Length: 388
Image 1 (cartoon, one colour):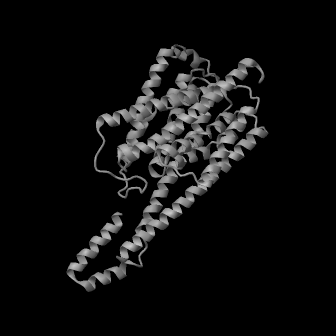
Image 2 (tube, rainbow, N blue to C red):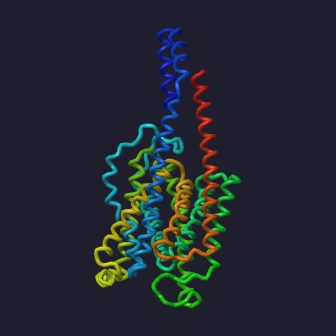
């Protein structure tokens, strides 16, 4: 609305000076291209950058996490900690200036939130992230990476469910189709007899292996539900509590949330006693000590890139869009898993992957229609304002 306000101000000043000059000013401005189009290009450029960061960070982080367990790593708490504790590398991003034109998805309000309210928000979301990341680590430890990734696609269905209540999401036929497909995609994997990938030589029908597979499945589904809830709450927080449309607001959400979640996992790490076995774990890592350290370091970096992309997409579009992009990247991981970890790609997984991609395309098309409707509404409103 800033552009319309500037036009109205300009017209008002011209009217005071000369009525003829006002008419001339309007006639000169009408043929010009709507400046919102340029702003919209910049916005979608940012969306593109956030999308690349999310998909790349998620894919690399998941593969490295599986590599850690596959080559001798055994600490669930350490695997969780490295996904969260890399946030200090993002601190230089605070120097990036926010764009002057705000997004249209969040309404600015004048009353800033209190420090107590912000602290409660960051602590609550941080603890939810910590629990979700730990459950994801358990799932990644006990499941083949291809199965794990396809189950994670269910987070889009959970996110849509919570967004319906928290973010006033409207269920259109395309969104409903997307949710049904993704739910079926994840549910199919429960019916395949799958051996666990934790180094145990037991067959797929061994009670211990089957129990670990079920444990990994349940933990991954629970983590996906928590992740979907976290995204919906994050979008709600930007709209109702933070009330700012700046890149700094995005960074604050990531940094403070990461401080809380990292602290919680660090406490669990020392309380569990797993820190005592780190030296032996490093010595016994199949790829060597240097590879052990580099695996953990690049895992931490990858998940921080994912965090920037995830929160950035929530800020620019919506939590459901952020989750849909995450679901888009999930089918990429099973393909890499077949190449690098020699996971089996049987018929059930192939069908599950096709349904997951189909579900994302269905949701993406609905988002495309929404964007067209929004652009048309804005252009009509600006045209009416100019004529007035």
